[in-house]
Length: 303
Image (cartoon, rainbow, N blue to C red; front, top):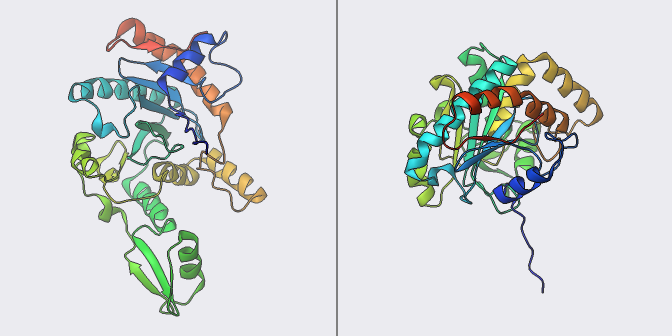
């Protein structure tokens, strides 16, 4: 019996090796390991698959650990510095605010997960209520907090069954086990002390989800257990409502396939946006390298 080999699709060694062998970089043809943008001593930045908006990047740990809660204490300043320079560069290029999110301990990529932080631009100047409403819509769509529903003595635990029953049946004809969660229900960890505030959760084998905007009133850090890609789904909900280009894209795709989940990277990679993001970041990151270089910062992009 042969054992199944699980590929580490966020391997620093693979990204570094492939980048060195590329003659033109960023490459015209985006592939799995040719998306490296920059690196520091302990982290590296890549153009992220599923970039429904340009500017979508990920910060990944060079060391194979499953959560940013487990980085060394002395790496906190390095991570904060990289977040700061990347956020400023993306914000300046696209005129957007930056959200960042992490699903700690999710084991969400091929069974061999490496800690990674998503950074994604959203429309500037949105009121808190608009963002909170989008968070709540994503939670309701996922039936977050509802473990099962019972109908005529049968228990249904699959999310699709739960949704079908709750959407298509009269209220009172089924029993809900659990409680639908909304934004106030999931703010139960200290977002300002992330990632270290999540260590007690991680050391007990738990999960956590970080979603951070420029406002503390629209950010959350929770140990509630959600399926993966909640952050991407929330950002897509925000942009679908407030970004005409995304709204138009959504309508176009759903006309062809009403079951499509445009925010899922497995369904839509948006390689053209990955390429444009890498290309746009060359000059601002080169400037950081030349004027404000810390933590052995290296830029892989070149013209």
